[in-house]
Image (cartoon, rainbow, N blue to C red; front, side):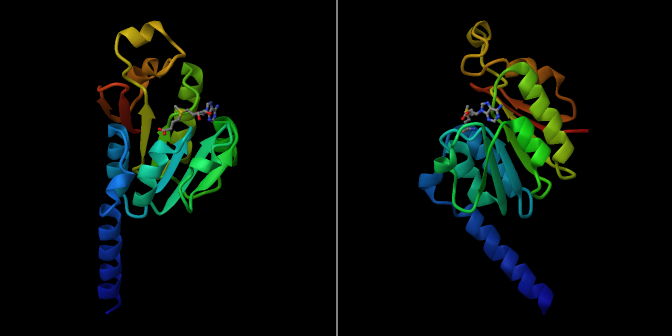
Length: 180
Ligand SMILES: C[S@@+](CC[C@H](N)C(=O)[O-])C[C@H]1O[C@@H](n2cnc3c(N)ncnc32)[C@H](O)[C@@H]1O
């Protein structure tokens, strides 16, 4: 009896999450992130670098728990129910006290060293079987001449990322990693 009620509740929640408002769609990488979030039951999502909230607003409806970190005050771009952490990503990873995230999206400071550190810190707090998504890993040839602009140096990190890995090469690139 209880099992049947639980199954019904889960089905309703699943339907609610896939019936997202079509106006709440975003650029191609946000749809991939939303799909990955849906693949986890009660996904806990962390986004490093929120800016206007474009990505976090698309992914949040697919999640049970959402955290956004930005060094600037980006609280206005946060979706309802999500927790905003205004601080550097280094401090965020030190202080984080939420559930182990199933999905971490790294899109903060685009300098190589910082992106590397964000990735290593994300591995430390990730839930077992979780995924780390790194943005701006495929800027195209022209972009590599303009490091620290737009995609920064994150493309340098991509070949180093170990684990089960998939890189979408469409501009500006998205790499999904399940660390080994
Ligand atoms: C490219 S934007 C993020 C866009 C957002 N992820 C999206 O897809 O809609 C980068 C953001 O990272 C923030 N940022 C830069 N350095 C940071 C740091 N060290 N820690 C946290 N956030 C940082 C910036 O303030 C900016 O809002």
